[in-house]
Length: 110
Image 1 (cartoon, rainbow, N blue to C red):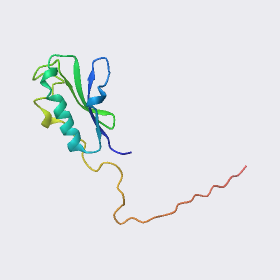
Image 2: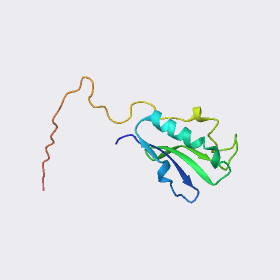
Image 3: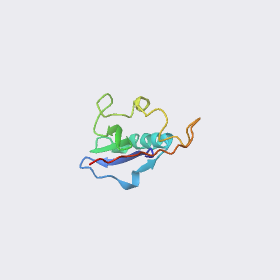
């Protein structure tokens, strides 16, 4: 499964603004897109949210109707996002690995 980050704006009734949607495998691009969304001060006080997800799991959810220090307010704490670590996806080749053909034998006894 390929790693996928998504960043987008959505309304509180779940509608996604397609014009704001970023889908990428690049963490830096996702971080930049989410930061750009969160810093839209023109949306402050409104019923909108900026969403950042990784493989359909939520990493951060910024509500524009919240204030600094409130839950779901990420503008002043973007550095606290818990990004996935380690290798993303399967390795293209295992170090020291070799191809092995595996077969199984099954004996049927009535």
